[in-house]
Image (spheres, rainbow, N blue to C red):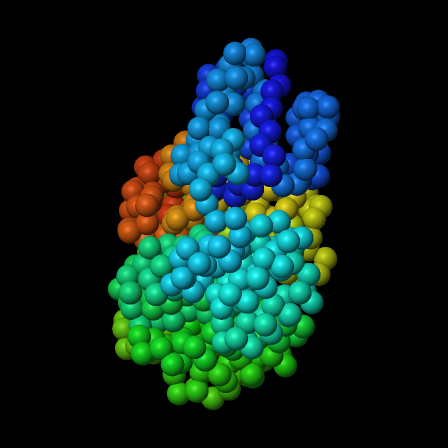
Length: 512
């Protein structure tokens, strides 16, 4: 085998473009393995583990883009590298041309070239993210800070800076927003409507916006604030500001807040900011003793948050307990004896969190790499239920996020399907801009293989709309044809999984 690299100095390439380059190289016949990534110290260490000679990366730095391929021959490796560079350049100049193209050399130059801009999207390594965001705010641009690994004190400073200028500081780690009908980050295509969403949860925002679209209501704006905004340290600075902004928006009739439960001292300030505008707070895993300000409707799952929002608009919600594909009875009947465990393999962190809440209430202890109950982390004892957030760093270091590359879950699907105790494999399939262009094409065959010879039932939830590039109905149909059970909401997928694993069909129809 030949290992070859192509290094592009001082060239930042985002994760979507990296994935495009990696796929192009892996599609070349004779390629055993390939990667396209930034040459950060952690990624370089991963590449060395794949057999890359350290000498080949001796002059690589965190600001350099690298293509790496392991192939049968030198000529195949060269062909793959050329394919990777071409794919990475498919929406712009080739990496080798960066620095020679006619483009703004600074944020200030970009603003001068496009003076009507009012939002900047910042996606740079965490060490530089706060500085870049401050520069954008200083240019009177609201910011979607896609980058994570920003220290807490810097997040507070950024949000105070934004507030002082009357701007939005969305993030850090804000993956989704929809402003004035324009999607930013991992956004879905939704119909305009009367609901404004404020979200401290990326796939939580996507779940509620797509349900609102599919259930005939639509969305005015989605403002992502970052997962730490409602903590006691950040104090809900941006959530409150976003609610105040939506309160003044004539297109917004109801506000839907999506988050894990806020710090108690933050809750009253944030939830009380809506004034006379109806506010539904979907606080996943909410303590039943929590008390909201008058006029605020509380929900403790994403599904119930959306149904409460529809009630506020006097719109009837659909029956969410319906499924497509095999019935629960058919699924149970074909399982080999002894299968009773659930394995949740999630690309969306919020969807994993919600599943942990729901399964914890219905079947008890569920282990996770992101546990919500102390003592329920990993490693898990034999015979444990398990939900994994595969977007966490231990799964994405040196490889693409499973939301943008469905193939990232295939090895785990095969591993858990081979476990004779596993009754259900639970999958979320996230659509929209930035997501895998056809996740069902990859996941459906793997699901079919997992379910052969009495193997575990695959229960899937497709998060998306018919207007998304992948097409909601086509994705659902592919999974159903493979034998999957497909549910109406993410919460229902967890309940269906619990019903199959326990043999209690009433669990699938629990009212949320």
